[in-house]
Image (cartoon, rainbow, N blue to C red; front, side, top):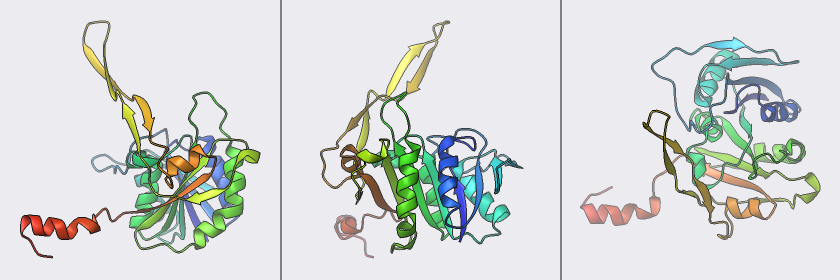
Length: 255
């Protein structure tokens, strides 16, 4: 199996190394990742500047660092690393959760989206760490992936669908198992904060505190809050199929 791995935390990120250690047990691994952190870039694509791809030292495997975002890395990896013969795309392991609406911002998920668009079985993996400065239990995600990655690879998926996996950042004995979930809601309060620089000019920070609706049963947020790994199938067909008939009736249009 030919496995291409990327991330959005950069090629030097410990989560990338944790994922590579597991993936190389399942096939031939090559790494193509950003040369620095590209968090929250979503499914962006570099269009109006050149991309640089340089070999990166890695014990026993081929690896490259790219001057672009995860989507760029997937495309360059397909072209330059595997000559368009990739069987599996893994993106991660992200140092933080990608739950609910946050997946639309996530570069980790963006990498999996690009793999899916190109017909590659794709899986995004993230560590659900919620407290700044708390230890990230990479060993928990590694142990869970070693046991379950084979099943994720073989699981039936509809076309244009990838898997978004979140692992609670807790010690392995505390992990309660895993659940297949739907996408929950993860929104922010006080999203934009304005400040002044020393010269009295206004500037802004985006962020805010998270308002999680974890009480919604069956969601990725709910599963993580209860100590389960969350596995969410995400489809790239964003069409609201259930609302098509009502919309056509409302605007007087046919199929």
